[in-house]
Image (cartoon, rainbow, N blue to C red; front, side):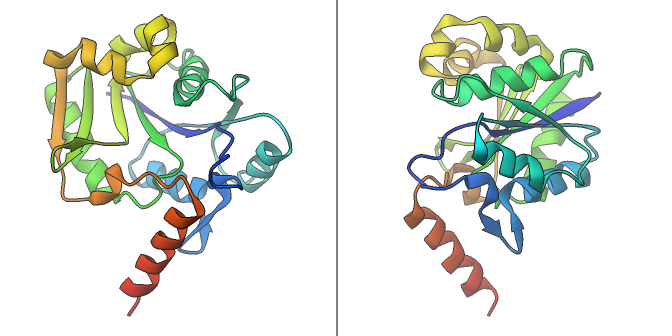
Length: 205
């Protein structure tokens, strides 16, 4: 079973006020932390989706020494689904059996959490594997290749995001209970980031 890893970093980060991909997490930018997780998980195909413009070039520069494909999301206002579609298009030639899709604002999800998700996906071959913390679904999500066409073409998904596709295939989705609250902890604002930094500093002592 071959899986590709896709980092979604193609939004404007408008609420954060600066590119989330370049924020520091334990001494490295968010995007590099996630790429390192892909490497630890032995994902050979690694894609980072960025937006257009100067900020995207800064992200590209930070990735210059890393083995990954950087692709541009031309629809920067289209939400995460637009970035996901750009990422799926980039892996078409590889034809993986699935894709681990990781939003860039979740660098603090533990690798062992994703290992559990991968194990469940490989053993059960669901349409998608989704982590659940408490009663909430989170990210990253592993999509089977059977989902790719619908994710790319669905008009409902274009309007309302990938969750529409999850709802349409509820019976074939595997929810994976995890003890990692980071899976539901999107970092969207400076206050969110400051909270993360405080938690890191607290854990250091």
